[in-house]
Image (cartoon, rainbow, N blue to C red; front, side, top):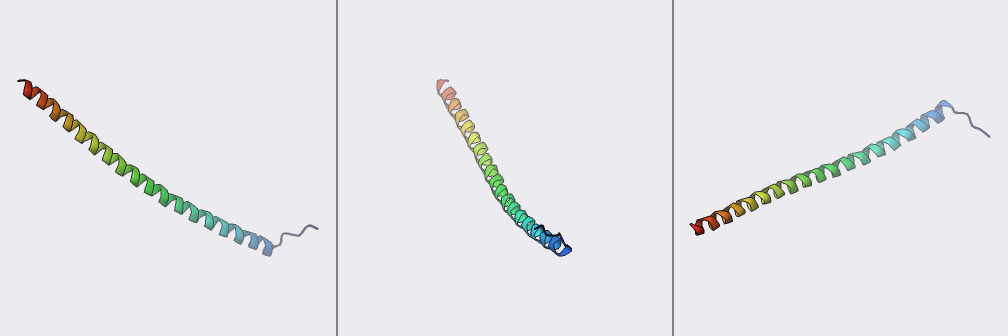
Length: 72
């Protein structure tokens, strides 16, 4: 037997839907925080790699300078 959609039933449904969306919003907030941590970690890794590359280039230049200096 089909039940009528009374105002009370519609209000109850609306309330359940609103609660469900609040939970979804909370989950998205958690995901946003996780992505922020990942972005921070990526930035740190990139800065470390740039620093390491700089040190390596400096080392190669120093070695090349020593090789040239010893041949003079």
